[in-house]
Length: 298
Image 1: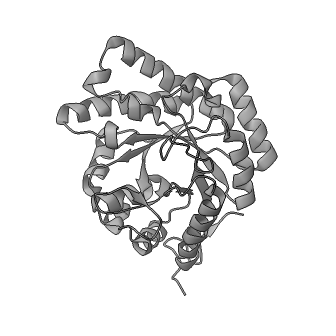
Image 2: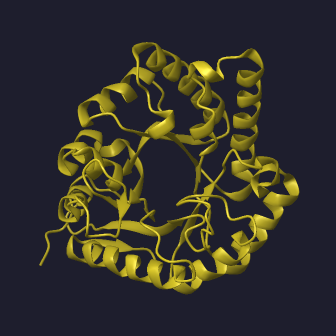
Image 3: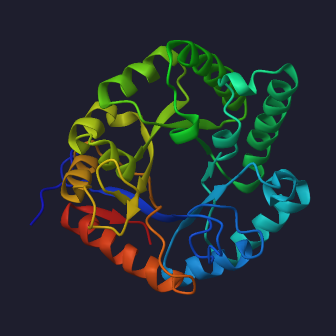
């Protein structure tokens, strides 16, 4: 039998299961991650049938004005679906940032910076309307921090975002490709109490990082977890077929007392098999959750 997690004697970690928005919608050539304009409502019903507790909402650059999170009417529609299904929206993945990173030279014009700030602030303000509390900002791939100048500019942007979000009761979760110790020190340089880490098992395995070292380094600063698998220096693959060591992932999460969401962001399969794929991924994750003594909120 697995040992009890760290914390009070006999206490067990309570987590929730979630899914990245769009994973229950056929890609139809749109890539691995996108906002499912034509199917976002149905994803809530499908998530409920699968036993998922939440959906991590995507706010992307493409056609963002038509994202329901952008308008009061849209937020009302989201709340209606939440009420009907019981599937909540706790976190927002700000993929808009992947296309227009605030600290990159190409986004440095006064017009772009002003527009970016307005969009960011509106998203943060509207998050509370749908019950969301975490804004996840990716600093990976096209929005990865590469130079000292970019790091300085990134920290300045995060501080501005965190100050505005803090006034609204919102926390910021950063996803980076920094090595474990560097990620922790980067968070320390920001010096904002509402800035945390988003841990991604696939990014970690793809970069060759040690899961235990990374999770133990971040410890109580982990506000959200994405579960996926990658080959070393490769792309996302089916869970259990890449370089991710899920025994280390879940034993380390238990050790730090992680008690928040586990978001499925794993590989897609053939269009039309989304429900079966997510069901299999959920069973895969539940095996580790049970083995390492974490329990899901029903």
